[in-house]
Length: 117
Ligand code: HEM
Image 1: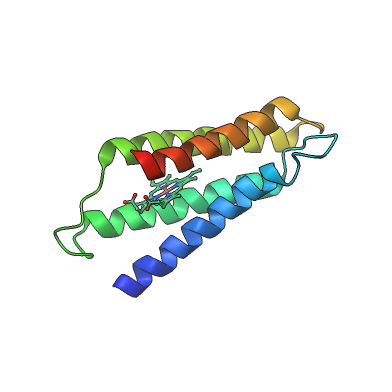
Image 2: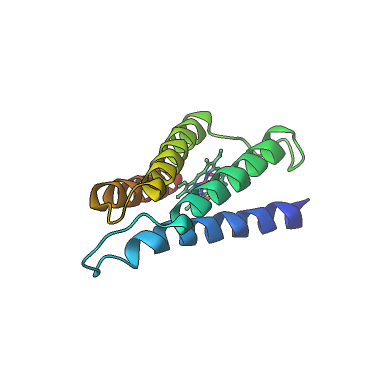
């Protein structure tokens, strides 16, 4: 089961790269757009995150593996907000600097929470 979990974790990092990469690549651009990479990245984070939580909670990874519910709860709320902002931003006429910044900061906040909480 470890190999499956690790593959999902790698995909979790791919989703992170899609989301944060779409934000960072525009730091030097004059126009800040909300791109589909942001929504797809958030969805990848959500799906892979839920799969990992499911595997940990089910005991498939061994009884010693515990899930930090507070941390996961905060990450879950943030990623849903990011996905909504990305979906709304994509429908609006570009550029969308405020939404672009909010999405980037929230994604960054989730990295900080993942590492420090
Ligand atoms: C923008 C959204 C997200 C970002 C940037 C993010 C970031 C990260 C990072 C950097 C890690 C590796 C660090 C570590 O293992 O402590 C990680 C691990 C993990 N994430 Fe996420 N994550 C996001 C969303 C989610 C969501 C929505 C869930 C669950 C519903 C989730 C569940 C997990 C789990 C289970 C791990 C494995 C390690 C652990 O127990 O913390 N993540 N995430």
